[in-house]
Image 1 (spheres, one colour):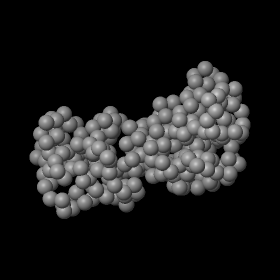
Image 2: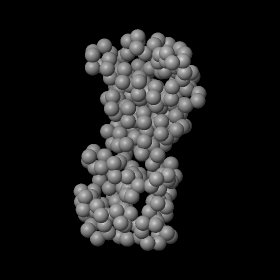
Image 3: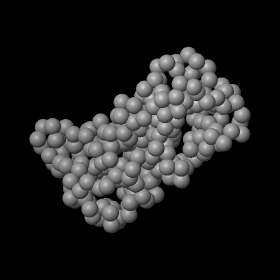
Image 4: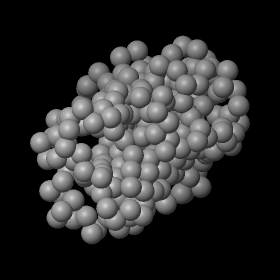
Length: 262
């Protein structure tokens, strides 16, 4: 830490504490404040491993007393909060005992030839964060979020992403016309149309499109797709959760690429 003398907060009405509550509990507050809230030691360490540094590191007072020496490389100032107040920051059912405030990363520019994931109106933060994890794991380093998709840098998406954000090129708030900038083919999924995934020849690089949890990929985006695939479901269920479907599709693309079949 650059400041060895932590600021201690003991009042619920402290101005910084109010800002942190908004940042942690409002899914779009990061856009207004220009900074993001990471909660929990795993997510904070993931940021440090990617070369990020906290502008402010916030600890439950007793937790800082116990482990503060482990966070000497976090950067920024240290704030400790009375144990009874720390939980008031979090929107989690089981609040963590520490968090980082980081500057909101600069908006990325679209890379036309990058293997990508397009999120078309997904609403559930857990699904969005999980898909980001799968994209990072399987080598699709660019994620394009269409307007209406859950805010990518919201605390819940960050929590579900478990650090994947810091290894991805992320663009959000995109319109249909923005997809014209991609020079890779779009692939869409359907529960009942197209080739079966395990039989399909998959282009690489490509851009996989995953749509709204209830309505699927919009007709406008589907109209831009070069290929439609479906996942075999011999168990007979009507459909898969979109994050599960995404993991299956992205893994199939990664395997095809590794085997030179893309």
